Length: 261
Image (cartoon, rainbow, N blue to C red):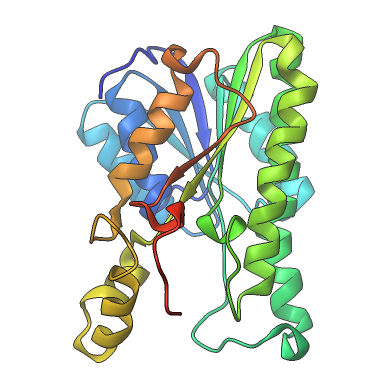
């Protein structure tokens, strides 16, 4: 997909790997200047690859779950790269292999997930949208999850954060639409990242993988590029009349396909 993002500055959180990295590459290939954020130094690798491809990017390390860190990141991006035209709230965390029902869920896990997956979206959106409102233009894209639409066991904090993100998306869209700012979300289904690749292609987890795939009508997990293409559309002027929307990219998983789990 080719759109015109020439010269637009995009801040992408959690862009050191996975979906965020794929979005960064797609944006650069369509002319954007990308501010790569991540808590880990992986972001430097994303920047190096972008520069190798002839694009413009810079790494801004920081924690989206810390309001002071967010404000410093946004100020640094605006000083060094210019006004932020596009914000992609992609950074997120979840529980690890040890999962618990809500009545046994750990306080530490709850607060860690909400802090990054929901507070971080609020902090970044608030910091960036203030300038967008003044300039009367801008795009915000929040990377949510199908888990914010359908119930999921043993991941109550992640599900709550992603559902909250979707309603926050709609609420902010109502607030800033009059200023020419659009706010949308993407809800990916099972998507191949370094972590989920082990789930789908490790022989030890084959039974779980087959169960998951049996409930995806298209019969495969998504690629990070599938999500990146959706983000590319929402960031572009082709979507100039789209706001307050949650775009589901899940291979049909939430369309009502029969499930046994």
